[in-house]
Image (cartoon, rainbow over all chains, first blue to last red; front, side, top):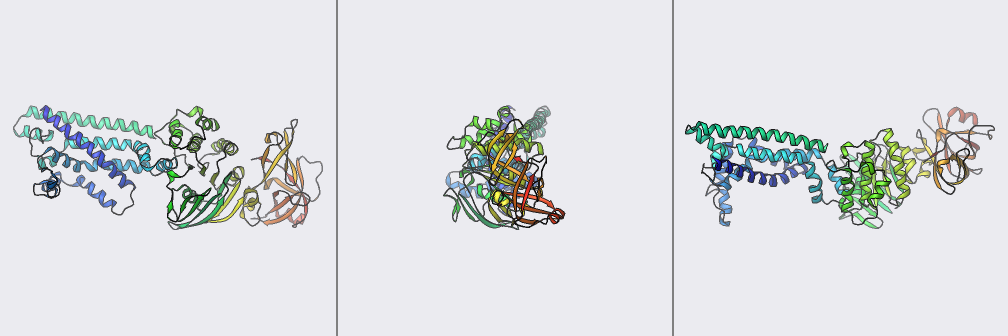
Length: 221
Length: 354
């Protein structure tokens, strides 16, 4: 049971780091670009909010298949098939949780507005300098919300994992899958333990997030 | 010289502006709301980009194919709302520009001292009053070592008390620092107190540009007709009368008694005389409580709104001295039968130091 928890935590941690690295520039572009294509991209990013996870998982599975598009392009470069691997789960989690990370960060960038960046520019800060010293600190409540939502969402995901994971112990067997296994094999005590753990974890995440965010916002007002 | 020329459309608003401002003193961009003064200032900072040309002291900041980005222009910018960084303390805000500046001509302690910021250094911007915030913003801009300071209505968002709190600091800046300032304002009284030069804007165009005193008293411009207008006179203190708390200030074409605060003998001073505070007599009034009665000559009469007229005066017997404005009723004008060229005596009820 411990290895399941550790694997889940590892998946969530890796996914969250990637989500922040990918989501922050994307959120920045969505907040500041005037390109017409922007809202189209935003809609694509938001798709996992409304799509059934199994639909998303199905397409991911098709894309990751040994004869799928990802393999066709990157296979010759030495990429091994992603389906039913940990890496594949990471890719799936990132796609699935992207809107939960991008939206709060985008909102934070938009709420801060152009003015602090203009002030930074007139104080000799080059755009990248201003991004790290002004835009990111001002968006920190949004970044935190995004990180926690991304982490928690990855921990709790089921549908995508079901489709592309394959339930391989130590590789793709995460919490939500383990609970299903326990229930199906009538191991109620174990199912109870894991479920209670998830419940407690979720509560703590939401409480911590709310408290820290409140504090950050008070500081930035 | 600061030479600026911008023209272009801006969401249904057309700007077509060209002016030159000297590289010293305060140049006010003055005009009603929506005349394009803020856009002009943003173009000078590089925050807005309109086709045009901009040169500062011979350096080209913008021209065809040239556009220096804002962070490479040696300007300091004070926004209407202080726009401090909320995640940094007052010190953090002040040092933000200082850290990135190439040279260190303006020292941290000097600015803290000049703007009275010592008490505020550790505070968060959220815990400052509006006036304090704007002082920090001015200090932050100064510490970025600008060669040109741009101020966009820095007092407009403040209440009367905060305004009165900041104005003396701005006047000190003017006296102490040699940095030229472009100052956007729609408040004529503010401009009369601070500015040396004036660029008068109207509907996206430059109506007139030149020294402040001359433009205010120019009969062809709308300034002299405005309610609350004051003539601006440059003078020098020639004597101080401590017993009555008065200073004698020589201006072109006469001498005025001003409050003793005008300073020691020899000090250069700007005096403001409101048009409403000046009345006219055909003969020299005797036994009056009015301190300042000066011979002058009518050099022009402007029809005003309603039953009022503004009389443009030149000080001195010949009328070739400094310009003064007098706001009189239409009835007084008729009973005195005033005409251009007439000699009169100007009774001045109040003289303010600017």
